[in-house]
Image (cartoon, rainbow, N blue to C red; front, side):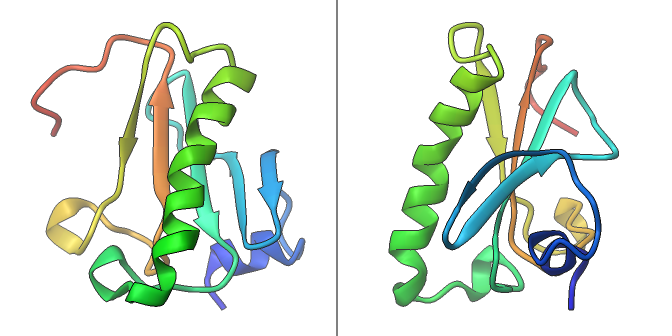
Length: 112
């Protein structure tokens, strides 16, 4: 099991901000911005490059939930960034697809 599966199963504590039947969102313990939330499917999809057509509805719901999470955390109007890393060179550190929601400060471009 990945760390994210353990969080979804409540085997590891997390500060959960949103939950639906097939995904969960919680504050990142290694925050890179004042608001840093991970939106994670409960079942493991190792990375976005390995997502299948059957995952489209789940991924869409996760992206749409980001707006609700941003509103809940007070950053909807000021802005937020969504990031999905794919592979080691992109900064992927957990082999379980997740969306980073970053906000709460100006985010430079290009990143990294």
